[in-house]
Amino acid sequence: MDFEEDYPSTSREQDCRLILESDRIWPPSVRSVNRVRFERALLTVLRRLPDDVFQLVESDVSFVVDEGKFHALNVPFSKMLPLKNYTGTINWRLDQIVIFNAAFQLSDEALVGLVAHEIAHSVEQQRDHNENEAAADALVLKWGFERELKALRDGAL
Image (cartoon, rainbow, N blue to C red):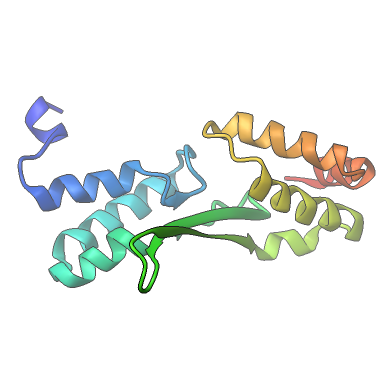
């Protein structure tokens, strides 16, 4: 690819690329055939959406791509909201924990470990995926879920 293809000149195209490069598609930093196909499809849709719908997607929508090997994901969402009759803002945050069907193939003990691990992601929020996983595991161990985390790791795909 040449420089022109990497950095298109139109604003919509730049905004589309920013969405693809952001952490709005979960899990972040996972490259797979499914992920590449999804990004290609999403880019096609984003390019053709009406402006008002594109703005909604750009500001309020995130995506989860089921990679098959994941049992669950914690998808954080935060937004600054203006306060009514006040000039300040508040930061509103919601973490969505998505439990995939594959998780229910785990033992009950491993499922407890999985839920604890995903909740730990709401507390530990490292930018790097590997650091985030290690920090969440460390927190789960600190909370006393060593046996359940081991069962999760032993039962994971």
